[in-house]
Structure formats: C-alpha cells, structure tokens
Length: 165
Image (cartoon, rainbow, N blue to C red; front, side, top):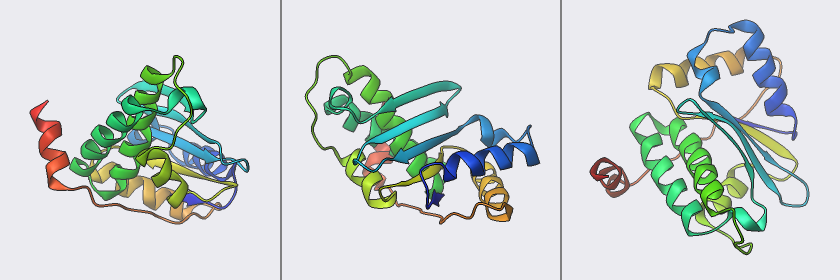
C-alpha cells in the first residue's frame, strides 16, 4: 500500500496497530520510504526477523538482487500483495549481506521500488498468507491515511527456482 508522504506509511501502520494490536500481519509488515534525494529505506519484519536498511551504495549489489528475486518468488506464493513485500524485504536482506564495501549501483529491486513508490512517499509491504494480506488491505483502507494498493505478478520460473533451493 503506497502513501503520498514519507511518513504516511508510518502513520497508517500506527493507526492499524491501534485497531487490532494482535493482527498477525502487523508482525510481518515492512515500511519502505522513498526520500527526496532518491534514497530508499526499508525497515520492518519478515519471517520474524527485523530488517533495517537503505539503498546507500554499500547495500546494493548482486546479493541484493538475489535477495529481491528470492523474496519476490516467496511473495508470489502468498499472493500478489506479497510480491511487493518479498521484493522489498528480500532485497533488504540481500543488501545487509552486501553491505561491506560495495559501490552504489542500481538494481532491479531498487528500480521496482522507485517505480512503485514515488519520491517523498512511502509504502507498507507484506509477505504473508492471502488471508493476512486481505486483512491488511481492509484495515488500511478503513483508516484515515489513504493509500494506493500495488500488486505485481512473479514469473513461474522464479517460484520454481525458490522451491528448488
């Protein structure tokens, strides 16, 4: 779910937390922020693990792309909304592994985030079962901070390669 302001996702997430603190999707969501100088930050949980990273030069590289593709494949298994979360969170996890000394370069993950989350805006991404995704969408759409839902298709080859690992 994409929001018009960098802090929009934070506000919508906080409102959703107040509605239902026990909602399972809240523990699996991440927030993506696209700052005005084209810097991307991702923070949140995926698979019970907290991720906090940005697209500074040192986190973009081969491992980031591999993580984004793997995460995107996992996201497809959990539905289209899970794809965005998978790309963001998989890229973040790969970026952490890449973070020591790599020069800044563009990647498919960062390009996709930039395409879906305009500068000076933010998003909540989720990699979860379809029921949780539906619950997240319903909760966010009923809140006062309105966002725009974005979904992506993942190629079958990518899902197959993930299952083979």
